[in-house]
Amino acid sequence: MFLALLVTIAPFALVLPWHGAAMAGFDVAALAFLLSTIALLDADPQMMRRNAAANDANRELMLVLTGIVSLVILVAVGVAVSQQGGPDRAVIALVLATLALAWLFSNHVYALHYAHIFYLADERGKDKGGIDFPDTQEPRYWDFIYFSYTLGMTFQTSDVAINSMEVRRLVIFHCIAAFVFNLGILAFTINVLGG
Image (tube, rainbow, N blue to C red; front, top):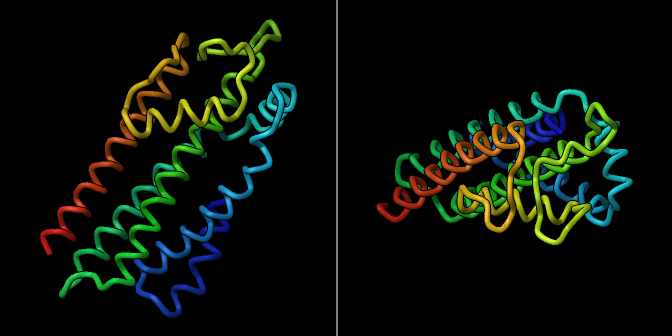
């Protein structure tokens, strides 16, 4: 995914300033990533267990890289909106698309990570769990998307209970990342409206 980001930035760098190339490249890579996960949405719990077992390597690295990319994108947005004379409509459209895709991308990565943790086998061969969804014994990806996007919007859970230290730690980092991202959006909005 991140290699795709670097590859997609290159052509944009020929015609756009670095911040525009970074945003446009990210948009293409994030959209490709989001579209590539559509097939997962119908996965049954057995498939989710197989995915968790097969994709156990570098989970933490993926979250760190997601955070770094999100910060770079926020910096690029900040540079774009603070240009002398203010951003034109095309830049504002690119910034809005980038912010929307960055929000979707980061929350989606966390949703996949929560699903991975839940369905990874513990030392007894059972699901690790750590998240209790009401009236749901074997949650699907949609359940984890609901959980993740709720955290990304509100910095808290809704009707879902967390009962694992590992998941709590991840939720803390997710909420901090969401808070920083939302502060960036607020700063962008004030900057654009303040003209």
